[in-house]
Image 1 (cartoon, rainbow, N blue to C red):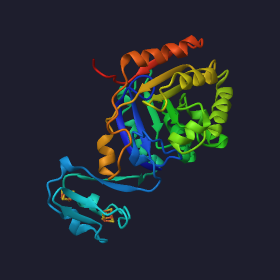
Image 2 (image 1 turned 120 degrees about the horizontal axis):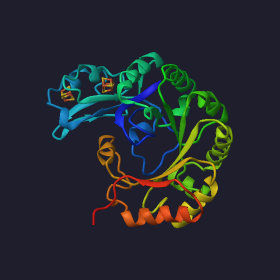
Image 3 (image 1 turned 30 degrees about the horizontal axis):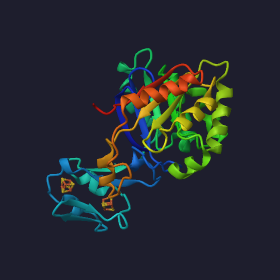
Length: 305
Ligand code: SF4
Ligand code: SF4
């Protein structure tokens, strides 16, 4: 699998205490993406300024001369870098990271079971992205191994996949965290790069499959100022998912990923956007509830008064 990183002791990707595995590559390109390094399917390296001691070992190591030491730190020429990882291996302070390392399912499994001590009755492992179902065959293999070890499993998907991929992971996933960002297809395309017809169709397919099983669907909607935070969007999603989910989480926008965009030398549309207010988040929850929906919650930090 082409993986990005593990997030341990996570409380935001399903019930209980979890370890979340993030993988690389996503069919969507959400304008607000909080893991911009996960969008491309290609591996890449990142330089982390606070860890660098300026020894320039990496510059001397690179066989392609893709690195240079500038006044403000190490610069990566991404046109030239082929993400071979040689500089990453040689850096004495782990200031370079390879994002998208090919890792075997067995190796990932060994890493994940190390955390079993804190999973408890409710927690477990969440496979996230990028888009995990873009690597559905390997994901199914990994989930199967986790279930055989008695570990709870969740799959976090944007829904832009095939029914065959859903079928592959279905037997081994306890919970599906399903993103429902924008209900209007044109708006969806404007903000994520793709229309949502397949996402909606797959959601209905999954909801049918879950019926009569002990599996669950949790919906997640990122609440992004000026994009997903309108009354109409929340009302539209509410009407679409009604009766087909266990829990709906509205996740308030945050700007914690600003430095990730800087590391990729990319401008971020939302770099100066303020957090949502608690009042507006509560209003959106109320709009959903007014449509007759239960189990709707807001998550994430909001603006201090
Ligand atoms: S090898 Fe690591 S510590 Fe040394 S200059 Fe390169 S990134 Fe910085
Ligand atoms: S990953 Fe390979 S090609 Fe890219 S900068 Fe490092 S050594 Fe050079």
